[in-house]
Image 1 (cartoon, rainbow, N blue to C red):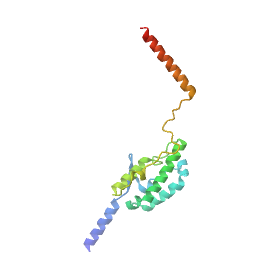
Image 2: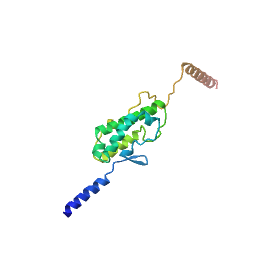
Image 3: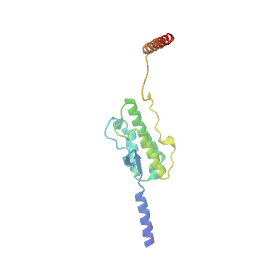
Image 4: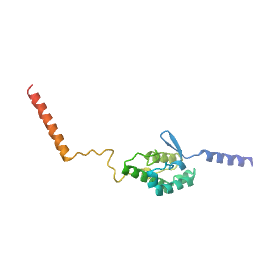
Length: 166
């Protein structure tokens, strides 16, 4: 009877220490807290996707098999993708480091890997927003280009003239 008690106790102790933590930068989050984003435009715009993902994450509690299932990960990815697209479309900074964050998805994949659950890189990768224009839009109009080329040409010819006459 004592052996059974010790086996049961060790199993429960092992279960209690297997916490599904995500480390993003210097912060550590539990799986159920990943989508706790402060009230903002991004939260209201993605409430449909994120409420489903949040309910799934909280329903899994600390069960790594549940947290690393395809449907759980795809709902988390859909939520993060929605937030990322919203932020890019509105050219806004994230109200929280967890909103639309590839770092959160990378930490989630690392936590699944630590729990011996393998994920494909594609299942935890954000895609570029459809209207992504790069970090900076540096376009020069035709008139501006003509002015720049003319000034550059004059400076170049002047430099050659000076060197020719030395």
